[in-house]
Length: 639
Image (cartoon, rainbow, N blue to C red):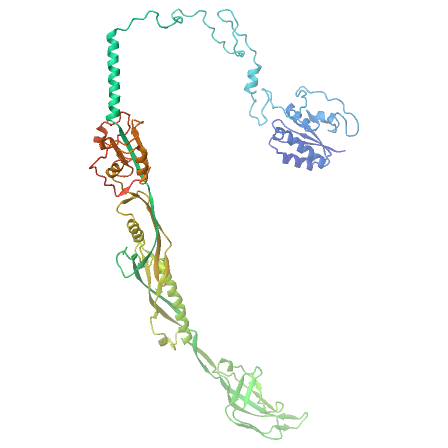
């Protein structure tokens, strides 16, 4: 059975170790784990390596000089050795944890080495504590022992005795550290001793209070009683705070129209001005002429007819058609007569044909009639090709084909269609660019109208001109409506204010105007808008005082409740009616002139003494007969 040794590096990961176990050709594998290896940080790594070896039919052993690493590997069920030699002596790593061999034999006991003492196998990996004199695996010098272990290893010095001779418990003192200073043998005499407790109480023999003192105290008490009775009879007061009840206005729905025929907003008719903008646009381009005029000439030349008819003459009339084998036809320009052919008797007998030439022109115009020498070989249709022959001894020439570009009606019509599309695009681009509208105005493209296009020249005058290209342009003028929507909010606000009423005022910050999305119908722009607010009634403190003075507190609260929330504070507290003296009643309308919870008193009000003996942080002004109750344009919100 083959064996093998796999050496790991300190930085090797679990995946690298598993791959090297799989790649080993040996059945028995010793995995040498160096000190400080990443794999030796968890027992789970060794369990994964054990499973990997089992799946790949490998018998895995761990060789490590570090006792903690061997303990982790052993807790994962793997055989462990302190050196490769120990693994070789044990039979190549085939021992189990119980010391039995895979072959059924018992391995000899392993002698612990001096460099790595035996470590008991525990279920969890103990904390690794390398010796203080060991060398770092990365060659950075000795690794110091942890501070906690160094401290625990020091002997503890005996605790010093106290000045009284008794032992004093204290923390252990490590050897080599300077001893703690001993306690002084005696307390300094300058420190005074603690005073003794003295019992304090009433003296049994108190001096008697004299008769004049008792008499003065009686006079003071009598004066206080008289003052309290007078305040009850003549100085009752009441503070009343009325918070007007808010009422909603709206929501009021309006539709404001934009009218290009007005120049200023019209709130009565819900109209705002609009601008009808002129948008001039133009487009031009160069176009190619697709029509043409063609000039062609027919080719001409001369052909020679031969007659092999020895029995009779052969007449070929004018206009007879001869042609090339490719079908290019020519016609004769004159009538010719071929004499009989001569027979020359001899051995052999020879027939000498008669011949005559005649001019020909091509049937069709163009360069196709320019044919080379001897290209015309097809005799007229009514001639016997065995007795009559034809050929052109010279090339035919003079066939021409010339084309002259010319503007056709279709060219002009197509150019106008293309320019119309371009001018529409130019119009749309001008609208998107604002069409020259003011910065505070919105252009409504739905209202845009483009007028008729006018060509730069009369298109009919271009037809028939023999040019390769021609220029053509068109111009047009369009309109669009632009609207400044800011007056829409003002109109809605005006309509809202008209619903407040003279006896009410708006609550500050309650106005809410929500414009809707504008709509365009039949070229008219409309702006829907919704407005709402909160108002409170304007209350007259003098009028309210006239309603409640002299009434009970309960009656006054009921009367004032119809105007809002009411808080009545009488003084003294057991007073059950509103004082009839107006100067003894303070009425505060929250949010109106006369003071609010958010307002500070004026200097004169701050200097005026309070009518109530109770402390007051902010004196309230008194509103009596003749006091002005006119309020602010906009009320403050209720607290």
